[in-house]
Length: 188
Ligand SMILES: [Fe+2]
Image (tube, rainbow, N blue to C red; front, top):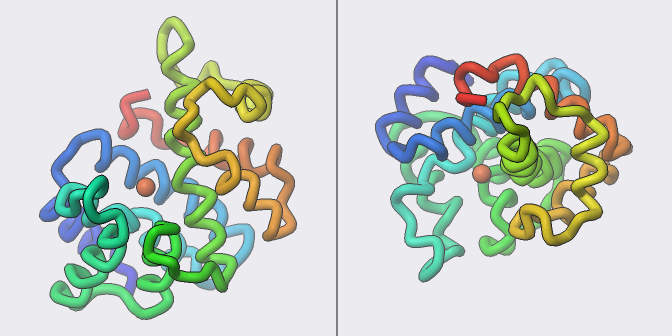
């Protein structure tokens, strides 16, 4: 049902931009860890939702039609015969512009995991050798309050993990560790 090889096949067929593919792997890793914690029986669903959430990012003109980011991905997944309604709803809900309500812990998790990967990426690039192994949880919590740093990173979305009863600090630590595990794939 949530076959990773098939998901990667679909992803790489439709998404070509390298940093977006890397971002997809980063969100997958964070979502797998969150799934283990909040919904262990459906860990694969959480991971694959993370992997595929930006599937349509090369195909949709986000500036002109931000509301199509999500629906287009689901069209593709239906055509490919992959995924289910739970996954589709979470992919829709990760983009505010679709006006899809966040209903489940899975929806909340992808909404928060999406921006934190880019945020950790930006923090890593500040280090002289640009290596994620040097990044500390404290630099993430500190940078959250520096609004001019990575100004585009949606703080509100990242903080909202607390609605799952998880401290932001723990979320930062989980995300950092998940990304460190695949640092090679992420080029960090
Ligand atoms: Fe994303």
